[in-house]
Amino acid sequence: MTIQILASDVVSKIAAGEVIERPASVVKELVENSLDAGATEIGVEAQGGGVELLKVSDNGTGIAQSELELAFHRYATSKISNLDDLEKISSLGFRGEALPSIAAVAEVEILTQTSSEATGSCMHLAHGKVTRKESSARRKGTTVTVRRLFRYFPARLKFLKSPATENSHIAHLVSQYALSFPEVKFSLLLDKRPTLNTTGSGDLRDVVSVIYGSELAQRMLNAERKDGLLKVNGLIGPPSLARSNRKYLSFFVNRRWVHSPLLTRATEEAYHGLLMNGQHPIVVINVSLPSQELDVNIHPAKAQIKFCHEQTVFGSVQKALEEALARTPIATSKAVPFPVGSGHWQSPRIIMDNEPVFAVAQLPTLELPVLRVLGQLINTYIIAEGPDGLYLIDQHAAHERILYDRLMAQWSQKAVEVQALLQPMTLELSPREEETLSVSKESLAEFGFTIEPFGNRSYLIRAIPALAVRANVIEIMSGLLDSLASRESSVPWEEKIAESIACHGAIRAGQQLASEEIRELIKQLEQTKQPRTCPHGRPTMIHLSVHQLEREFGRLT
Ligand code: ADP
Ligand code: MG
Image 1 (cartoon, rainbow, N blue to C red):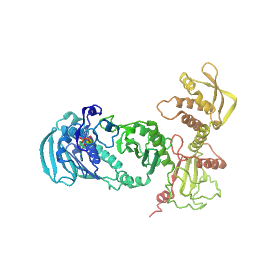
Image 2: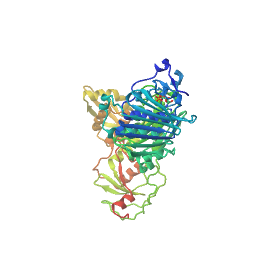
Image 3: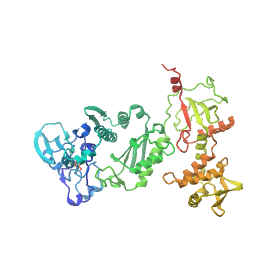
């Protein structure tokens, strides 16, 4: 399509506005233009945090000489032409605003060459006006150089952070586009330092390897799911690669890098119970769907989007991630089978049995290999050996996981086992607790609690879930009401109830266990779906692999 100025009816419908906030915004607009022009190689260069110089060159289609000036007019674009096009945007740009906005706040030089013209053209602009235009040779593609950004806009300059910070924004941005377009070869020079070079191989794992390192890239899991025309795919980190901030969440929709609270929530939902509080996963996910199912025209920077069917997208993304996490291949596949009963390791209280230890192939790492119990340490941790080394298991956290899984299973089948109390217990509640109880009474009943009013903020508990028999019922109730009252958490009420019962019902640290009890506990833990974390996301166990042991003991050369 040739470049045209959009008609006023279209202009009035586009979410126009300031798009150039900082040097990284210039890079974003120029890189998007290069990608829209079909480039397979994009070079980005920045100096002085991007304020002195920014340069983006590509090998895309180039701009015809006759259209070059027009490209710098407001609302001049080759990507859409009418209102209908606005409903189905397939390019990254569509408003015809970026080039004029950049030219208004900096000095711009553009050098471009199409494949059909004998010679290319070069044009200079200052304060938005063309100052020079000439023919100039270049191989097919476009180079835009932006100098002295915001020189005459002191208020904007003041808002910018140090060159190092602006550089980090630029690096983050280029990384995101590299993740979204693995078939494009990106290079980034920051103050002449090569900072990023992707291969353009088309393999996302190669890009992840360049950006996050090869070890991490190898451990990322494939996520893939198709629900009709909606596709989710990408790479996601196992819970063991968690990070302490959300900077490692990369979401793309039809390959556009987006900030999406919806996708963030779907991800958090999928990792729920697998990560500790404050931890976040590494995720690189693209959602592709027909462009009509999506509105990208809601914010000038085009980083926000609106899905027509939010719930469908939410569900698909959550499931894609959950499936990938459940498929986790065994991380210790190079494990050396551990010699059975070699007895070279003595525990404080040894329970020997003759069950063999198997090196179980292809178990998802979330699951546990068969463990052989060796003993209990300070009445709190269980020591066991597996095919690849030593396992120290927190007995309370492990039991919590078992109870939680059982409760949720019973609840979802509407078959929670109930234990009637021979002697009803009396419960005295604060006004706030009473309020919580009145709204959650039915939910509690679904879990087997029978609670009757007894006048004057007193209640009688007549029955409790059978799995809570070990627990102090009064403690459970007050913990439960507390947790149900907390609003900030997005955890569904049934999970809160199950977590609370599991936590109070589980055996405690410091409790001595008989060998039979320990063995039973481990057996049950092996059967849970997520044996390595408790329902709160804390680890249930520490694993010391044979390799780690050998390293610690200096046996490796
Ligand atoms: P938009 O991207 O919204 O169309 P821009 O102001 O960013 O608006 O660009 C205006 C037009 O200039 C584009 O529609 C495109 O035709 C042309 N253009 C800009 N950058 C390039 C490039 N790197 N390669 C080829 N054409 C380009
Ligand atoms: Mg553009």
